[in-house]
Structure formats: C-alpha cells, structure tokens
Image (tube, rainbow, N blue to C red; front, side):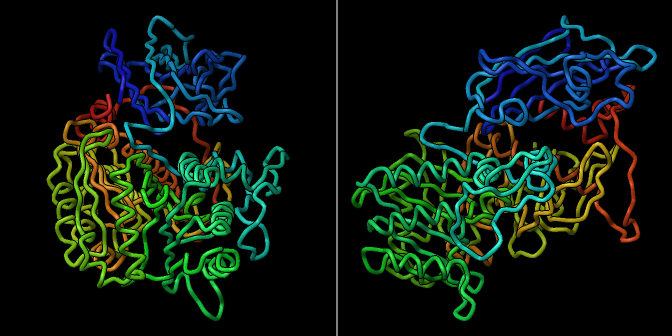
Length: 585
C-alpha cells in the first residue's frame, strides 16, 4: 500500500508499514542546486501537527533561518539530507498514547542561499500525502515486529545507559510492574515500560492471543516453544495450566535442558507440573535436533480458530532484544493446519523420523478467503531441497531488488547463503541485507552500485557526537529474523519468512515452519523492516572500533552539510544512492 503526489518535478511517496511509514522523495536534477534537504511536518488525524526530528543539525544553527519555537534538530531547522525517511509513530511526540489512523505528511524541499545559509521555508514548494498508520492488517492476516533496537540512541533516550531487562537474581518469574531503573532525566520506569517499547507490535500480538484465551473459559491454547523465559508469558501459561487449558511442546536440546544445573525451561516445566490440573499437558523433545517452532494455536473444544507463528521466541531476548516478527492468521483453515502438525508432533512425542514420515512434513498452498497467495512447509523434511532451492534461485535471478534479514549467512549449510553472500556484487539490482555474521560485511562505497550487507552483531563502536554512548545490552543475537524479500514494489514480489533458519541442516532436523507469501503489500512491510535495520547498523558498522589502540579515540562531531554535495550521489547513475532513489520514488 502506498500513496503518492507529484507537482512541478517534485514527488513524494508514502509506503504503509507496520505502525510506521516510509517516505520517499525525488526532484528533477535541475532542482537540486543549493538543495539543503527536506522538512517533514506530520499531522496525525485531527491532533496537533508537529515536525519530525533529525538527529543532526547545523554546526552554527543561529546563522540559518530558524523557527525559534522548535529545537535546532527539528526538520524545520535541520532538514533531512536523504531522499527517504522512516517515521515510526510515537517515537517522540506521542509516547504515552500513540495515535493510529490517518496521518498527513507535508514535505517541503529546503534550499540554501549562495552563502550556504538555510533560507526561510517556502510553503509553495510543499506537497502532502495522507496514509493510514496502524499495526498491519490485511484480510485475515496480522503482522507484528519487535522493535529490536536496544543498540540505539532511541533506547538510550528512553531508558538510559544502565538499563537492564531482568532484576538481579535468578527468578524465572518476576513482577514486571516493578521499577527497573531511571532514565537520563531521572524518571523511573518499570520493566513493563521497557518491554512494551522494545516488544512493539509483536509483543502486542502475543499478549492479545494470551489475553483472549485467559478471558474466555471456552478456549484452550496449544504451544510450540523453543526459548521460554518471558515472565508474563510464563504467568499466562501457568494460569491456563491451573485450568487444564493448555498443552505445550517445549524444546529439550542441551541449550534448554540440564539435569544438574536446570535451565529456565526446566524450571518452568517443574512449576507447570506443580499447578497443572491434568497430567501430561507438557512434552519435552527436540525432533532430531531442535523443537524450533514458535507457535500459539487457539482452540475451542478441538476446533482450531487462530494461529500465531513467526521467528519470535517467547523469551526476554526473543521479544525485547532480537529483531523478530510474528504472523497471526485469523483463519480456521491455517489454524487447523498448524493444529494437525501440533497433534502429529504431540502423538509422536516430537520424534523426528516419525514426523518426516507423516503427511504433515510437506508443503501446503493457500489463496483467497482473506489470505494472500501463500505456501507453508513444515520441517523436519527428508528432502529440504525444493523449498531452499526455490529461494536461492529467485535471489540469484532477481531483476529488481532483494532485501534480507537472516540470523547467519556464513556458518549454515544449504543453497541460500552462498547466494546472499555474493548478492551485493550484482550491480543490476538493489540489494540491502543484514545478518549477525561478521564476515563479508560490505558497506556503501561512493560511485559504486554494489549492494550493502551489514552485521547487527554487538560490537564496540565509537559514535561521533551528537550520538551518545548506548546501553550495553548485548544478549544473544540482534538479528533473529529469517526473511528474504524479492521484487519489492512489483507485481512479482515474494516474501519468505517464519521460524526456519533457511539452512539445510535445520530443515532436515528441526521442527520448523517456512512461509512463502506472494503479495506486494506484505513484501513491502518486510522490506521496510530490513531497510530500517540495514540503515541503522550500516552507521554503526561504519563506526566500529577496529583497533584496540583507539581506546579513548574521539571522533569529530557530524553536522549537516551547508551545500548540496550530499544530494549529488543520488543523481549519479553509477552510485547505489541513485538506484535507491529510483527504486522508492
């Protein structure tokens, strides 16, 4: 879904994401002389309008045309020097209660005078677009994403440099309404405040399911779980166990099971069995390697009504640190399919060979009745080749664009990872990717059309002013997504996502699901998530501390340019920025 406006050589396009908007701008080449950037004014419904903020500002703001009622980093005073911008509702102006509904974005090109000073805004140059901002919903499918930015200025602004995600001690369950710390302004916040912000729409979808089941005694919940230690999720599971309204298939691979030193999952199993009203409501197992699904299925009696799936583990790290996604199908057909897979796994006690021999170790196609054109395949498989080869082939032969966010690209087997590793070499397409792998990073190079491939793995960085030191939370993976998008913004757009690590060994030995969705709007939402992650970590990777000798290194502050040099690369056909502007405009 997008809307666009054009006038006198200036165009803006707004793409709808999951509670966020991607704004893309373009001008005629003749119009970029003395271009200072873009001012963005936002009007949420009938509420008070505001200007979006820019982290950067001019070195000497007082020399430029300034609105004294706005901060020097407001885009009215510090125009954005990029040709696209991602707005996340509630980042600054609506922290207590985010408005969902129609947003009008008014974008104005800004110009310098011949002395390099910002001129007063000329509203005759402005264009406006109106688009709905809300959690993504299409037919019977909802999408949700974790925010995944504990390594960010935004997290530091909200919760300070000393933020923690669990209290001291080893308690599995704790009161998330208790005080977790104070932010940089000395204001106290709770663990739930952190969780709500960091978990974003994925957390909302997870707890919508849990609350729906807890509030209706006629409903039951079936759960596939891998990592499991999120305190409020566990509280909900234990409440349902007391009423005999939950069944859980929980991984017991060494990462999650130890007889000598119990893992969180072992502690949970003991607590679960102490309160459950019916025997054998939890089964531990690992198929052949891992029980790697992350699934909720709502049942009424024995009829499946709704299912939540995706990459998000039901853990503190999974929901509040990792970059992850969930999908919710409000559809009995899809829910029944997942329930059949659950029942097969339950009856076989998570036995890999038996599942591979079952009818559910297969691929199933759907279309219509509020669903996109899609396939769902369930692992473990005897032969994982067809699914993985299809992705690798499309990536290798793509003619437009490829976006990806996958956990690893250098340690896993199968055909997909070699294709993703060399993808940036293809200068005929736009490619933008991120993983937690730290090899083969490829950053933007001026006058090169090669794509970008970055890492989200925690690393020491020296951020230049005005960026601050960030909170030192580095639990597990940053990039835990497993998705690839090909053909963004075309009729042939396709997305692969789910819990599958897209690796040959995982598909052969793990309990997993892999979804293929051929839908332009859904592919756009995932492409926007990849875009946000790559942009964010590209800056961090560019400032990575390579040499230990730079201990106390201090970098020069970054300021806005006072000429149009920043814009020239977007009009050089031999530069990735040109491909970027052309793709999104």
